[in-house]
Every structure is written in C-alpha cells, then in structure tokens.
Length: 196
Image 1 (cartoon, rainbow, N blue to C red):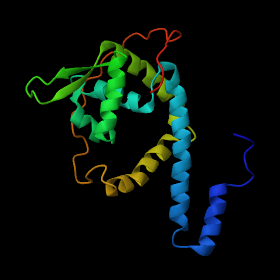
Image 2: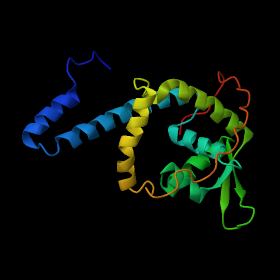
Image 3: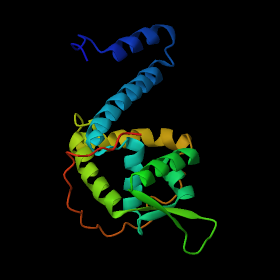
Image 4: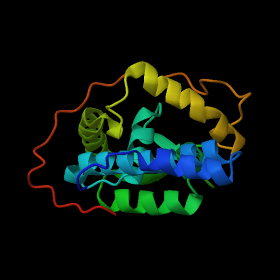
C-alpha cells in the first residue's frame, strides 16, 4: 500500500453520509470498516499459510478435524461448523485428500455416511501452520486481548441474526478433547503443494 492518507477515508465517508442519510451513516461506517478489516485479516492469514500450501478454507477444515474427538467428522457436519456450503466442503476435502492430509473413511455404524479423517501428515501440518497463523496475530495484532473479545461480542448478534447459530443454543456443544502433543515439525523448505 502507498503512503497512508492524512485522514481516515471511512470517517470522511461517514461524515458525508451523515449529511444525506443520517440514519444509515453509522451502519455504513461499521460495514465498511468490517469489510476493510476482513481484507487485512485475509492478507495476514494467507501470508502465514502460504509456506504450508494451505488456503484458509483448507486450514480451517484441518483444524476442525484436529479439534474433533476422533480426528474425523461426517462431511455433512463439517459444512455448518465451517459455515460453508456442502459443495465447498467436498471440494476442500478432495484437495486435502489429494495431498494426503485427509482420508475418506466409512462411518463405523452408518453405511450412508462418509467421514473425513485427518491423517498423521495432516495433523503435523495443521499444528505447524497453526503456530504460524497464531504468530501472525490474524491481522488483528493492533488490538489488545480485551478489545478482540469486545469485537467478537459486538459482532455476535449480527451473526446470530444471520442464522450462523441459535443464540439460545449451548455455549459449548461438545466437551473439549484433551490436547494431543504436537508432532515434530518437518522442514517446509521443500514444500511443493500449491494453494487451492
């Protein structure tokens, strides 16, 4: 990006909006700020994941599987948890499977269901990639811990209203599994995977 502006362009847009549409000015400024911060977050996370040959969608799928009790979930349960369409889950799992990071296995009791199960290589990669993403601050390192928590709380009603989750549902749908020791990282200097 070039030299920073001497003024905040979103604040200036809000000032002009206020003159014409005063009831919508705050919402416009908030939405524009969220969109701009989303760009910054994506850039930071993508940069952190690039050395591992992962996109954010692939990283999230691996992280979800690694967090699950058995390291496996039905594809039908992954979509809602990742907040994506089932077709997107299928595409992500296809790419992860092609890279040997996930495998499809039959459900042990329901023949109609296929599970995506993280492989040892997938678990090792996601642990290493998670360290890199955490170190990136998710593009939000200008915020303190309390500010980040406040931001999550501010955005939660918007997400609930959009149907991401039921505001009356349990706060913790599954007990957390005991942490597994992270596998030893491999040398990533020869990584040939490409982002999908």
